[in-house]
Length: 212
Image 1: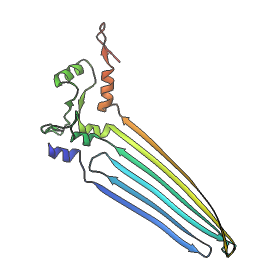
Image 2 (image 1 turned 60 degrees about the vertical axis):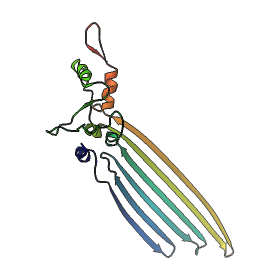
Image 3 (image 1 turned 180 degrees about the horizontal axis):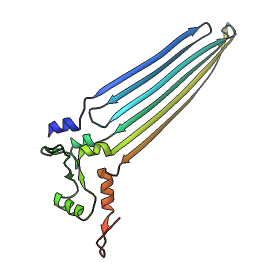
Image 4 (image 1 turned 135 degrees about the vertical axis):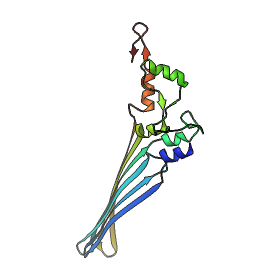
């Protein structure tokens, strides 16, 4: 099954980076502004990391350079998607593939494997009306994902005053803020969601109907 694993679960790892910057000077000041994008796609499919960053530095001089005001701004946003289906497929564990387990059949249709019960027991639950209880790593690439968003901001400023040649007064400050957000999404058709629904389902002893 190594060929199917490479075809359906793995990809070429790639990294791309783009930079754009502007630099300028004038008699009483200067500026530097840059933007950066970095994208990483690891070897496991349905995973990525994207980083957007902006940096700006401004300097202005007043009163014949006796007063200098400098300010720097850094803003970055990171977005990461994590899907463990490919990793767990090649690792030891309940969802790991055995050497003879195939991902798709000869017609290219995904093959579902029984994880909790034997295939016959799993099918008996499905015959009663339970949701399909099979697992396939390819399907999970679309259904079970964790998203991480990180937003970082930093502003620093410094004011330098030189009332006379032998005296310099500096006043500086910095503001920094970082937020992190994590969202785990197991869609309705994911194995995790179907397991939760099936575990919470029972058959009525009086009517024989499913009770959720």
